[in-house]
Image (cartoon, rainbow, N blue to C red; front, top):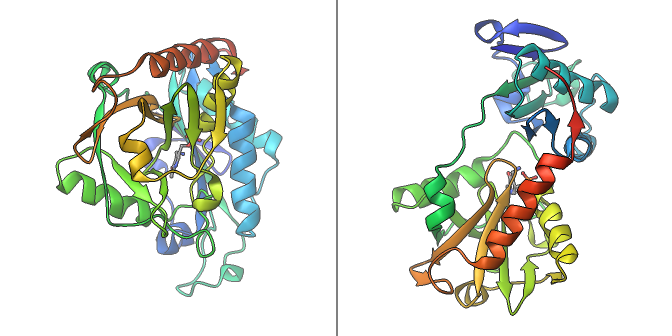
Length: 290
Ligand code: PMP
């Protein structure tokens, strides 16, 4: 496996960063998770755009243009001869001293990892997932805005630990006011009376690229699609619930906090959206040859 590290393709065991890198010392950096489907990088421009927006807010200067970063992703895929892949693009503040002042880090570091995609088991999509609400609330956007896709994921990791130690794979996270926000690495949708609803970003959640894509697919399928403040009650009484994310795609949820959702199995609208999503991944994206 070859990793692109600061412009050079290096073998995996040579792809190392300094212990003085502020990405490691402070989580000071940004990242993206992207997918390639059969030689097409899905929504690559949107991911690169979001990466640069996260970096802009952190006043982190990425040492190459968006166009060059796009080419860097394709180059790494080609070097690893991967037609299907999960891609991780990371930009760190770079090497500094032990203080947290970013001015001590003259140059940001970046790397691109392309790996074989670890698909969730098929049974997950067929049977649906059971999740629980956890006590750890999502970061308030006034402090650390979840819109910044930063290397500091402790908020999400704390929630994940709560879910896992309770015997569940995924956690539903609420906003500090107690409204539904998102899961640890996926956005949440409900379907109620053929309306497709998802919480608004101001509650403190990442505006997922899959989320946006699914909202557009919903509109194309004639559904009423809205961002709406949702409570747990709305989730429990939805016809269908599902999660969206680049790695997970669309995951049907059949139980939340032991309340059965709808008929207790993946619903027809979720299945239709997943099929439409797969169709899109076969048609759209930045094409490359390996
Ligand atoms: N929320 C969080 C906290 C995430 O980390 C992710 C994954 N990037 C998502 C939602 C889903 O976003 P996307 O559809 O862009 O992968």
